[in-house]
Image (tube, rainbow, N blue to C red; front, side, top):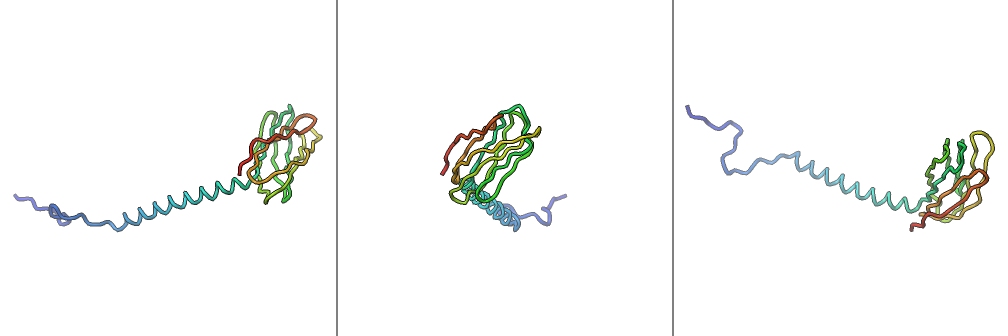
Length: 141
């Protein structure tokens, strides 16, 4: 008995039939890759405009709240335990300043001095038992 090729088999050496979905899938993957690169570039530019303030609790007490008040509003963090730190970010809208208002969980609080900032500044605020000390980590333009 002689075997014959199946109904859908192409003769030897004939070009393979094209799959219409494969080209669309490749185009879709290319568009996703391009969108990811564009998003990363835009997001990186946005980070350069932000001010980053790292608040460190250098006390043995829990901070009930840390409020960073700046020229366009405020950013708040809650429940910062002894030795813990929290990163706060805000858009200064050009040149600005800010100060911290700290409330201890067991009562009392502190207010830090005004700090001048521009987009890209990275600062560190050390909350102690009797005051708040500010240090500049870096300037990123």
